[in-house]
Length: 354
Image (cartoon, rainbow, N blue to C red; front, side, top):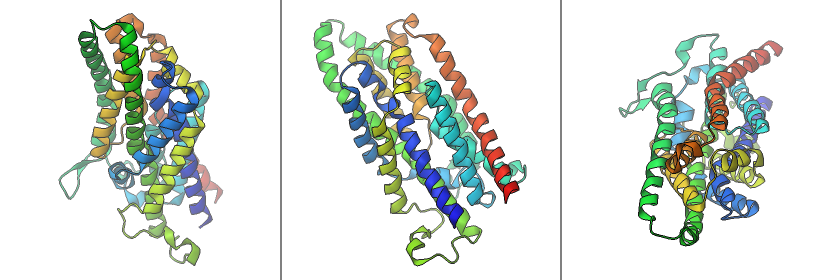
């Protein structure tokens, strides 16, 4: 029971860190273009994160039942997975690199589940079809979107920026800045809302998976009356208390800000005006909304970063500072292997210490 409570605490810590780590995803452009002050931008993003997190549970269900076998998951597994994700998020935040909290959590979960299964790779769902005929597993829900969504972000950002350049070629820069200074408020809100619909649900899924594992190993058999809310009505539903807890925690983390990453996202990659911020945010938010609708846990970081790159490349290819981009890409590539190793190692240490 104590370990389960620690898991719930670790999940909320991860969600809080996810909020301030990924704040830059929603507000870096609106801050860098000076449409909002940093403080107002953070509050704007936190509000829309909260609203988005309360919308739907498709991504949460993917995390809780579509990536690893439930039989390979217990309370120790989830705790190790969360610790791996937390360590990586803090490390990349310290470096100022916008890495993926989503992939940090997924990598930690896969590594910890593999450790629990004593190296049996069969516990990782690679590619399957569920009872409704939908594709589930790491290949369709993680690997393909991990490659495809950044490409869509780059192309979408570039195309939208080109269309805007063509449409506004006879409009004075002053008028363009006035129009898109207002429009960027909407795109930043859309970005914050989409971020909430996707990212907050991942922790909802991991908490649900922890409760499923606790049910299977008997932890929840003799619960005291005050803890009866921990029992799941069924294996795949997401209780409302989990939804609210994750939504509020992510919003609080977002309100705390993540200025190191904001500096990288908003200033170091591309120099932007409001019209560029609008194009990048609208592109990324649209992709996040679409993937969230289908329960695909896409990285908010990957999508907004490549959308910014695409917008910069549409201005001119040299406008993108590719040296900074290279550092970001290395963080992306290393996230899943690094967190999988962390999850695996932490699970083994915990079992050895018992």
